[in-house]
Length: 107
Image (cartoon, rainbow, N blue to C red; front, side, top):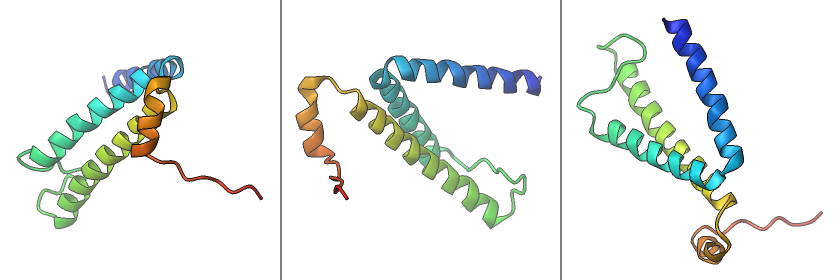
């Protein structure tokens, strides 16, 4: 059963990439929703899920919690990046004021 789940996850990744290629804005919104869901789980879950299988270890608690926090923030950044790359023209100036891009110097 785990092999089937593994293959289905790979197929889901391929489908998600096709959606991203077709509509980065919508894909970015989906990433933001997923990030908020993961943030809620990370912040409000009654206890961490131990990745190491050792429930008594402080390292296991820190690793599980930190991984959830970092992953949720990373997912949100990726979502904002995808949205920013495919904004409707009318929104671009407002987006640029809130999220200015660093100008690259020509060498």
